[in-house]
Length: 209
Image 1: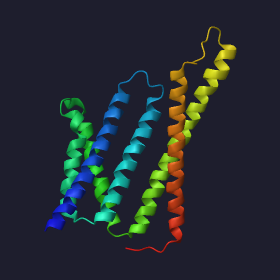
Image 2: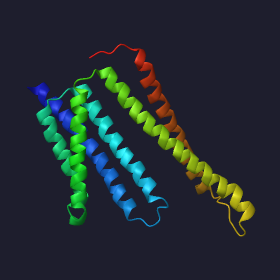
Image 3: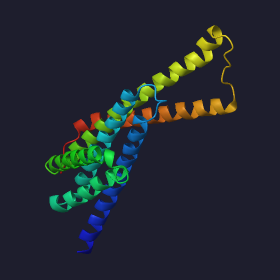
Image 4: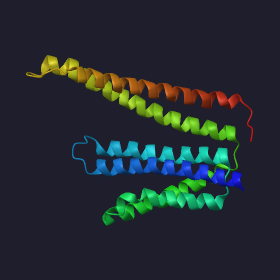
């Protein structure tokens, strides 16, 4: 009885942490929708929706694969997590309908992932989760690296040569910010490489339940 209690405590904790992560993505999406300074809000929204989907799928597959919970209590926990996702609409009724739709879609997707995960071996699920997260990180870091390179090209080469009165950003804060952004991008790129490498190498490992 105690071991079952501890198992559901772990499942609930992981599910709530995931729900808070998805709630954070929802808040960012709402901010992007109303931010006039976003140059390409459609692309940014697409990236955030992809991040939300990857988080929902990968986290549920990992939780269910490792802890093998029963469907009924898992559904109850996912419904609670879905209620948390609608939090921004509690004080703004005009967006509550959209958030309820997102919450319903999230529960449906995660329960579908859980049902499939319970019928698939742990090795296959780990391969799938690694490939999904690794591919998402690879695409995101590639796009971020392209944007950083383009920004550096214009800021330190094109504008100083062809734009009259342009002041090149040479403060130490500018270089620190650039180093942090490039360092984070390269770190995530390495993580994506390791995840994809595991997903590919795991194909030669016999599946085990």
